Length: 242
Image (tube, rainbow, N blue to C red):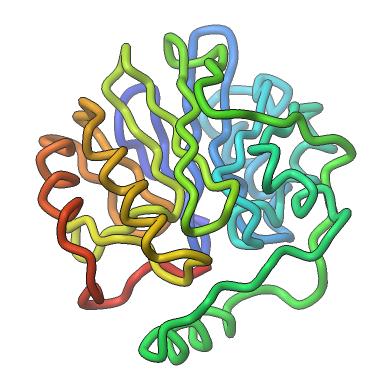
């Protein structure tokens, strides 16, 4: 797992499939997504490597229920005592109460998904002992007030997190990037709904955008999102995995 400083308060944690983000406030930390199962201890070690204790991570906010985003949430929460949060529509799948619905694949997505699946661990992840439900418009106590933005399409309960005070947006898999260029997310439940969600994110005044897959955009992010908001279609390159 690679740990990359993006901003003084923000680090990227990159896994073999997907990535998570660690936001640092003065007194506490917040983890956005948690990577695949088996990485709970690696996340704790990364936090320690930054000079903080795993117990400083007060919350793990999950952008959606797919395994490459929630797989290590239960492991890390057990190590740190962090609260785990997810949108109410995805929370039953995060808790392991129900199996999550599979994407409705486009034909061209199938080989890409098959390749990504080769890098996912076998077995089911350890569910968190509890998950706090989120809703659109909730404001969380980090980053000067992080706003929950419901962006259905990739999953019914997908969320983004917008930090207006910092100009930072976390998109989950609603948007990815290929060679630093934003593209609409793939492997979706509802493509039309996803593109409406991309348009909603483009309306936010974000200077920095962090994706579930691909390199973040660290400047001029709002313009980069507006460039794709009205142009649905197949992205080029290697898009986001589940």
